[in-house]
Image (cartoon, rainbow, N blue to C red; front, side, top):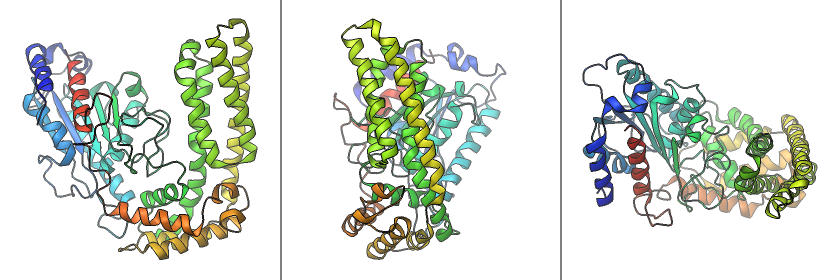
Length: 457
């Protein structure tokens, strides 16, 4: 049920909003809109098991329906909703080829709808939202649009609301509900959202206890299982698992590399000082977390020097020691470059890791009726092949990282994974309060979208 305050805001919208005065609409092509075209089309991508390729796209689904339908009924302009039909499956021999094929099908179906409506209705702008696997789909589409690689221009995307994004990134995706940088179960969507972030065109929501969008970064086993399960090719589970294991190693490096790139961008920003105070600490913290789990000594030393350099400059600003700042900033750039070089060298060496043992892991993940015990054994065997041992006996480039794996930790994590597959761990966005004012995820998304609609005035 829509809140009283939200109803009042929508009433205000009804009193003052007109399509002809809309800034975003005027930025769209000036051709006369086709008959029956809405001012706004809200495209929602449901989560796993919530839809299928034959589903009725006009039928509201789950939390996305709870968010959008009150807006559709109360909007002062014509707003239509569309719920993308796609497989919405996950691993384990399910229809649609598993999560990877399902997600790709969702991206294709959503892009096809965006393009078809955009071509037919040149004045229509869009809202894009997704939940769970659907947020993974919507997030990838939004990132492409924000970087001018999408099927519609960014100025026709009014706003994006992601709920429980499995590709949640610790850098470049500020998220309501989390006090620390989050990481998705399916891995990290690198590169951010481009112009959408710059103009507040994206909202991300995640409940702190939702492993799908806030997988503990220290639980390397779950990160590994999530990566394999979300990207496994069901037509070749054993072969793709071996390729994915190598990608996973590189993926451990990617978030740290992204943080380094942002620090280098930061030190070249004309507004360095205020940005460094506001964002420098967060970057340093995110970088430290990533490098801690890598545990690579060739990176840890230069990374520590970088974090110390950032902290030193922040202290100089706080104490107003302006004269010492230029030299200290130059040190940040030097240290960041050194870390970047070390990370690049680590990435190059990932191709030398023996991943032959990961074939049985992929085959096990692709079987219906997941057996946690068998899968735990397969993971332990794979790590032993890759590193010469498990637990404290792990050696090689990623030996310190894989020392976190033991029979007990793998078995526990895979048990959690099996429980996660059963569902129920991230279905609380209608009730869980995610901000300091006590709003639920549904309410926050609604308020955000109302504010985006306000921008049309």
